[in-house]
Length: 156
Image 1 (cartoon, rainbow, N blue to C red):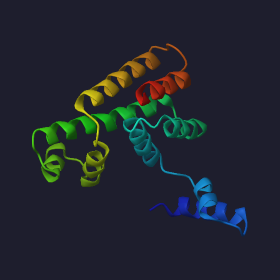
Image 2 (cartoon, rainbow, N blue to C red):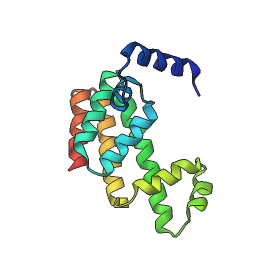
Image 3 (cartoon, rainbow, N blue to C red):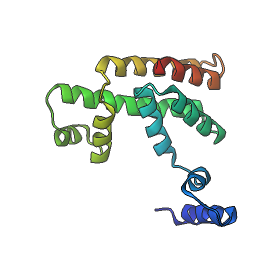
Image 4 (cartoon, rainbow, N blue to C red):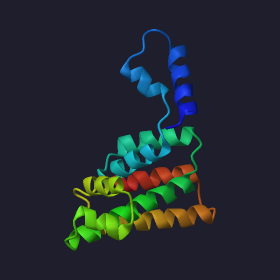
């Protein structure tokens, strides 16, 4: 939907040269932050530490603040917890959308992410994020190292 961004991405590909394959395109184009955060959530849920750390490296190189990422992750995990709670109560997808007043796509993706994720695990991750956020805001420790430690601990 952003024509200026689209034009910029096309210019990058044009400068690359004639041998442009899918792998080169994937490396060249910028991904939206919300897409990266969604993948990061999935990596944490699926305990895929290698991919989570790779995404974190990408986000760090883009100067994304760990405090901001913690807030985004907390928002996503709150949604997962709420959706899990409603599912456990017997609600169907459309009912959950109505109750939470969120876009249907978010609920659908949350349900997909919840396979194998308990409410207890969601709460553990939310608690870890809250502790991490508090330590960041109190100036305790290095943000980069703290965020990486969070990823390693939650991927175990």
